[in-house]
Image (cartoon, rainbow over all chains, first blue to last red; front, side, top):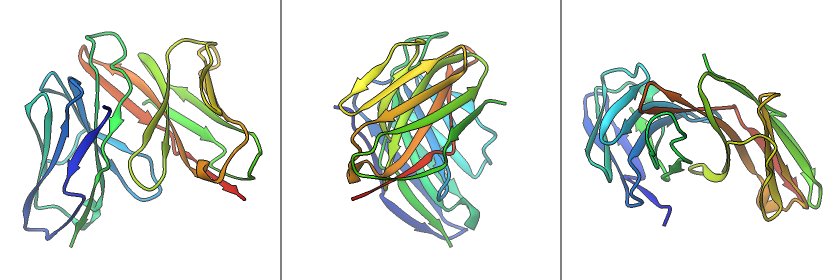
Length: 117
Length: 114
């Protein structure tokens, strides 16, 4: 099973709202990722969690707040977003066999299409 | 800054044609190169390449990595309309001791006409 699930599929929120995106995997992967993808552009890395610890934050604005409650779950909390934050938000996971070696292929979820009004 | 460049950016072929997609990269702490296919939603994994010169195959698709030239190609033989998609090349670089970053190229938009 190489499935990563994400909820919700679509989200429309106002600039004063607070919402959360959820991601789940049951492949035993220990690395999880959030990406942002704008139309006709490749995914851009936002955050990386390795063994439930935040290991990479690509200078993402604080209105995006990631959380990894356990090894299977990854959340992205959203607050006071701007219209330019509208995008497809992708979650991915991969095996993490330790430092210095490949973390393995990343499997992507279907994404959450976010619209900020 | 890590960089991944794909060519061509767009390609239109007829069913049955063979296509070759190119990817070149400049990264620090290279670990692997991956190919993904993206249709309407999330990228789906095709290949992961870590060793130079070893071809990976899956049906009509194959890929090979050249670490000396810092490049990879993805071949699709006997193309079908279902192959129409954006093909993304991504390079994995290990960051610090526990992080891993994928840097994506802009993608090649492949259109296969009947």
